[in-house]
Length: 175
Ligand code: IMP
Ligand code: MG
Image (tube, rainbow, N blue to C red; front, side):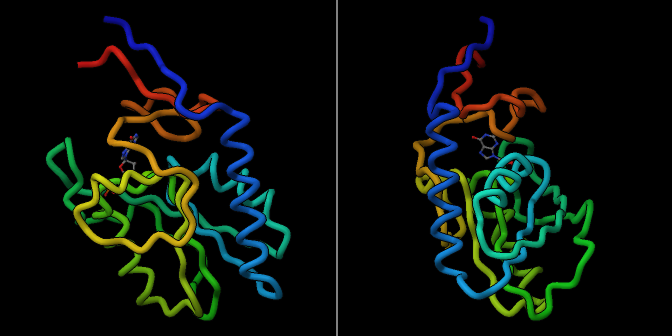
């Protein structure tokens, strides 16, 4: 069966949610500067749109991690494929994720980053699948909570495809 994508959140719904998050973050960090950390590749669309909606001074850095696993779920042992360019010491850091699933990758990542002594560190995710959580992760800003379905678009991929979709959808017709 050919793959089809069923829309879960339209381009307009995502844009509105990102604007809401940007406004809330700007209020919460009023008078400060914020250092956004984008976890490649899935978060790249989200971090760009979010940064444009934040009205306080923003700096950005990027990292890429891969987690060792059995292919279907992450083990939580994270290999840093590309580290950040800048130190975190003294910065108010906001880690920006596309989706929190089991929480394994992120909890390990946050542990590594906390050792770099940021002034503060919070987590913002566009999507959250709380029913899949294995490791407890404190999420400070969530775009949408979703059921246990595999979603694509707006940065999220299925076998490296569909990242470029401007909306978030569910892949149908895959085994
Ligand atoms: P975990 O929280 O350690 O299980 O891993 C989260 C990562 O798995 C995310 O950053 C995504 O790269 C990937 N992931 C989890 N659920 C989905 C999904 O529904 N679509 C696409 N990627 C997903
Ligand atoms: Mg990710």
